Length: 82
Image (tube, rainbow, N blue to C red; front, side, top):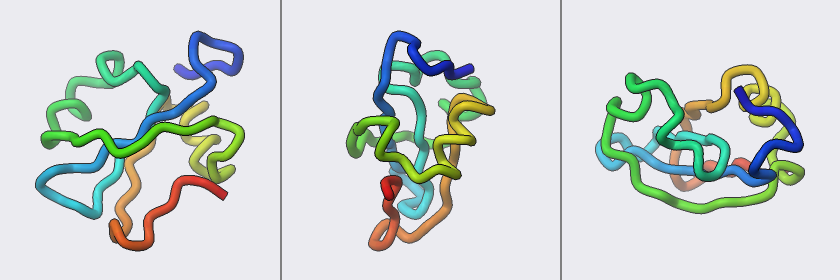
């Protein structure tokens, strides 16, 4: 589970190759620690990284609670940051 002050203060976003409206947000460098069911759900394509402090508060809370979040939103309007 994500803890502030851990090895990374950054997040990464990947998008499903097969379902372009599915986005995965997780701690940068932490893809291999995600549950296998998430990692193998679909092929994931890296999109971008950013600072935790810029994440939307609801996404940040989910990251702290679960270590990742999957967001279903049109790729054209998806934004993880405030």
